[in-house]
Length: 342
Image (cartoon, rainbow, N blue to C red; front, top):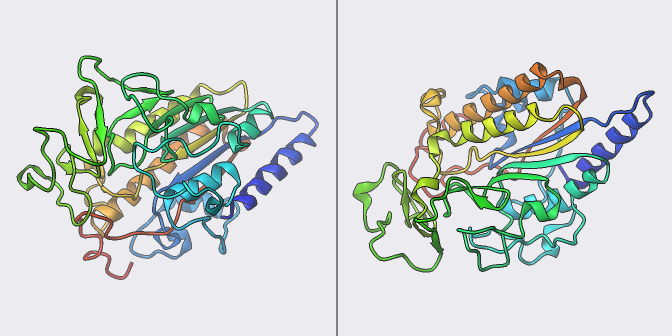
């Protein structure tokens, strides 16, 4: 969906609610998947996979049958979503490494800033990939500027993508779970002495790289870039969907007195596709299909939480993807071989 279309929807929603006898601005949640194509959703015609919770949103809301991503890749698409600015106007709005500086100017008008001015509390949970700091990040101290400086009251994110270092979570500018005695070092140019890589140590891999993803190995998965230290803070790939979802649930349950804006950046179905064991084999499409089933379950859990908290009727949910689908994106995971008629 075009960014300006989304802002128009929010504008109408806020004004309609403002006309009510007892005005109460609706909560707003953007669920932004990563590399999900419209043909991956059964409400849009997918027959080889079922997405009942995504379908619920489509069938009980407004289903867009002609919509356009602002860019065909993730960073510029997200830049447009949060700023309302064409990404080609910002030369840095391209696929960023995990060490890139923040590309949104802290003086820039953003969607969370707009909504804060309307009395909203704001949060981002999930994938960020818009840069952090000023280009020389010390991962062992407060990382700034970041989401908090462009309008988000609360931020629980991964810096870039699941296939890039650093493979840690960051909460309001601090690496979550970091042991100060094991500091993090990150490089996208050269490896650190003694660190295993996907290129040199294939015997340590649980997922084989196809192209590009042959740097530092974390949880048996080779990444883009090189990382040293931070062992206690490293994420568990198979638990990532649950981890972000639990943060989303906790946030929603804590927000009953004021309207909130939540930007939920899902990592699925971006590589590496690492479904939780509960979802392995959930589809016939291999890991890519399984993480889409996992993402659909997460959507259902979010809806369930809103219903349990009595917030569903006053919450506007916008579900979209940052760009279209990708099959082979750097790992051998049967995405092409098992795609079949999908």
